[in-house]
Image (tube, rainbow, N blue to C red; front, top):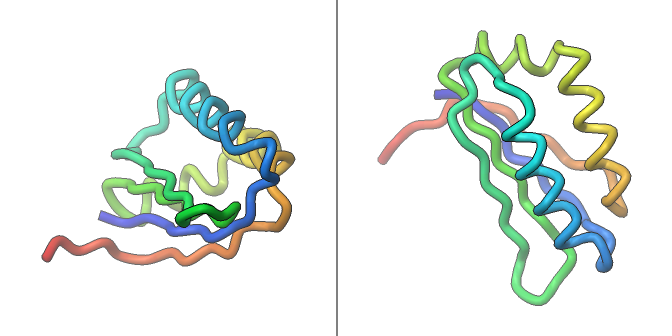
Length: 94
């Protein structure tokens, strides 16, 4: 598997809006190779970690290059204080 982890700061009033938006986006668009995603809010803070998992790097890269993904990114980026700090790589099970 392959994917990304992103650290960002979400505007305090937008925690629930971000959850709802990401859930809606995941049901609206079928992305080849997409496996799942997660969102973690650090305890009592506005720091959020976003996780997106794909079958492999090729499907991840294809999604990253898709204009529809860019449109979705711009929609959820508006709810954040900072640009996400992205970390891409191979995901291994332990």
